[in-house]
Length: 97
Image (tube, rainbow, N blue to C red):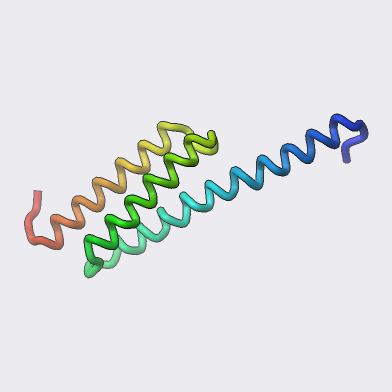
């Protein structure tokens, strides 16, 4: 337990920051989880995947702006899932690269 007034304030601030960071991390994680599930299902429509990809880009960019995740991690997530969606789209249309 904090003893001084400044330590109590620091505790309150860190609790608010933690809640804020957890909010954005959970948003990114939930979209990634949804995308993984959709990519495992071979009959998933490309339109649904594109919508989820847009959400992933939006949430990861916002989390980066809020300094919750690093810019490199956000770019890595977006790149990986764009490649997977593109491969899934090629698989559905019948062409292989």
